[in-house]
Image (cartoon, rainbow, N blue to C red; front, top):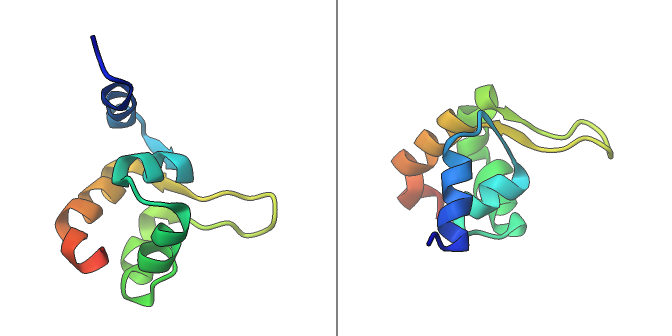
Length: 81
């Protein structure tokens, strides 16, 4: 029987786009940590801009091309966190 976390990771592997909640589930990091250390950090912002959609207004949301965000996190994990 699959654990709930295994099921969540399995679902994430097949998504094309991630939401902020998907990114939080994949990294096991809080929203604040991701914003501070990755998404709003100038060291990483320019590198992830091509596959990241930042909210432009109040009702907008973060979204990420899953394949590229996963690859970036895997390759730069020690520099990010």
